[in-house]
Length: 89
Image (cartoon, rainbow, N blue to C red; front, side, top):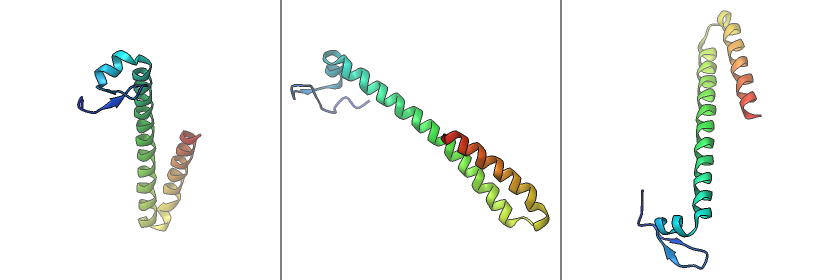
């Protein structure tokens, strides 16, 4: 943790993070909640990225597959697209 960073209290005074936690517990709680929300959003985006990578992989295999195989691959792509659209709603 970077304890050298300068923070400012409500009066504009320079403070360390430790002082801010002690003097402004509401601020500290807010910063923790914002950080937790960012971590959750990051996890969600990673999952969506995994789904998109899987769709890309299936699409690439579809393009390179012989015509008689493409029907099954397309059904798999359809399922992945439906699953991804469900995550975004």
